[in-house]
Length: 222
Image (cartoon, rainbow, N blue to C red; front, side, top):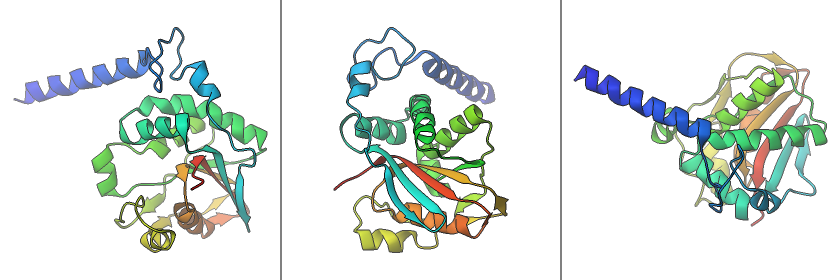
């Protein structure tokens, strides 16, 4: 029995490794055949709508950014990345992020991400925002701060009003330790800003002599 379990795990691991190494052979969005090591075809990339004014809000030491509009191609990519196990899409998003932080002159010493509760992580099996932080950390040689925790379970934000979202996440995050320098935090979608505000509030207590840059891949405009 133990041998069968190990074989099953090994086969699953090998399958995932090769899928992430060589896939997708087709565009993740439209299904068009790809002949290069890409994940999204050029036509779909052209349909991503980047925000002309990505700075959403600036208050005290915190800057909030939304890179793109959460619609069309970007919405489909994020949903696949977040809910359908397309972890490899972090490799597509990370060059976009690097280009964005360069264009906006964002200087940082650490990277971090929006954490999940233990229950949320068990349900999904991975944290998509951690994958973004990991890729950017590897490419920039900046360390990841993993001492940001979600300390209680919350309702899903999707069907909540703005007021309910704020109450739902109030004091849900804590940061352990103290840090000196600028921190770049990643999220997938900026909606009402309730997640962003609570995460940055937790970091404010731990940062000495630095700014916080909260960057979301996409932003809703409903």
